[in-house]
Image 1 (cartoon, rainbow, N blue to C red):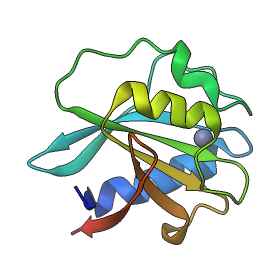
Image 2 (cartoon, protein in one colour; image 1 turned 180 degrees about the horizontal axis):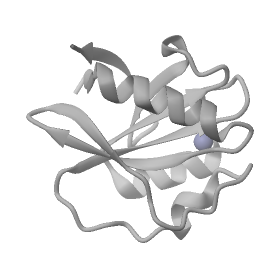
Image 3 (tube, rainbow, N blue to C red; image 1 turned 90 degrees about the horizontal axis):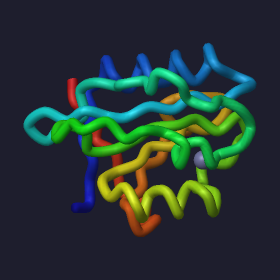
Length: 123
Ligand SMILES: [Zn+2]
């Protein structure tokens, strides 16, 4: 896989969530339909805060349409932290990171091995 497809409405909603939660992080699971990410599922009791290790504390929902995750970084670096990479490798799929100041240019997508992939916005 060298590209991840995401619906424009979802991308804009994610940017909005990142801004709303700032200076904290937000995180959620991404649902895919026909090869396009269409929906976010926010976990009921996420441990929001400045640590990126919160994914480990989540109950992963059993849902076959969940193919990835998203979380924000309150700082300007969209690079995955060590904890992020550890989580990505356990979860598989595709992982979006949205860095401050949360515009479309601040979004990056990574595979479970940490490799960056291109994002294609689908109208
Ligand atoms: Zn992170």
